[in-house]
Image 1 (spheres, rainbow, N blue to C red):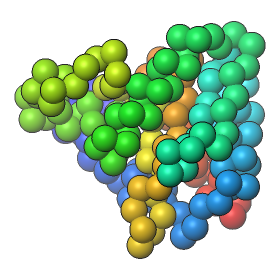
Image 2 (image 1 turned 60 degrees about the horizontal axis):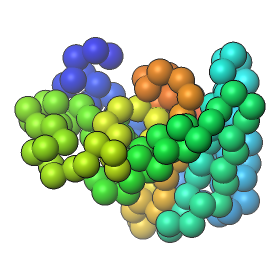
Image 3 (image 1 turned 180 degrees about the vertical axis):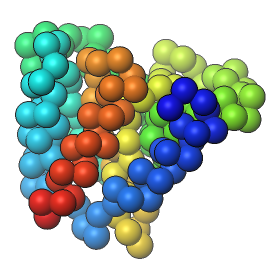
Length: 156
């Protein structure tokens, strides 16, 4: 997934596929724990946060993760909230359009263009929150979310 147009299409498919009929705080807890469990296969700590309607309903910062990971979570979540798409899709969309932070009037200290932020979408409602992870290379952060969502939705 190196080509921006291919990456954009993949992200669009994932975001259309990984949606919910409803999403509760209990779901956030279960999904957050599953994200943490899946992140344990990596040697470094992976921070996880899930927000619903602007409220942080799950956050876990394991050993090995640090304050810098929290800042990345916030930047990724802000990007998802601003554009109502994954932070990776936002990056790919801007690249396809030949744009960057400056063209969008975004402060790179506040927004992250890369993987690790994913919209929580409820069918018929829209984006209601954000899933964010930080601690891996950005494409791996994104894949961790997507793989976990696939498992979580299959189990529901």
